[in-house]
Image (cartoon, helix red, strand yellow):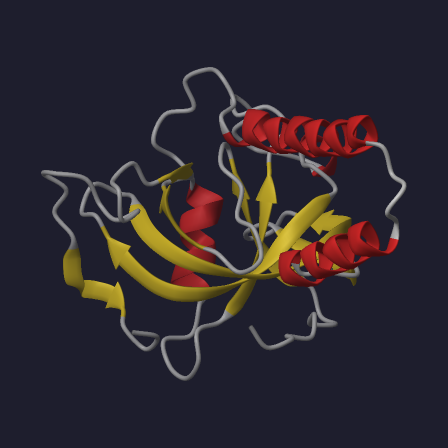
Length: 199
């Protein structure tokens, strides 16, 4: 995945009630809040997919989050596809590009953030370094290696806890529930209403 620079101007933000978009992944979400729909309707429909930020809410029950309601780290994403579901909600497919820190939040007419870059370390580079370090240190006891593996597993559990927040967040800004992340059975996707410049 090629490196994408973080825009210097305020970045449109799509706050998710649940789910996590990680760099290097694709995710489809259902969007229904007025501010989020306004964001999608403002996107240009030509050229390469536009960039936006994807944040995570601390509490999915908050319908109009402030900066205190958001986790401080978000993901820069490219919009891959947008389609109207015909029920006042939209399906948007996003590609995670890199992490950034939310510095300030503007709330009109939709959420926008001032963003600061964070250093990204790819999983491949981190894994390569860990394997190289493990080969260089022959006298590391097996118990230490197991503890490091367990700590990593606990960290991943924390990520999953955020991704699977309890409570009824409704359909607004949720991760798609079908295996391919697209609309579910019975969802009428009106491709004529889709912003089609990025397919």
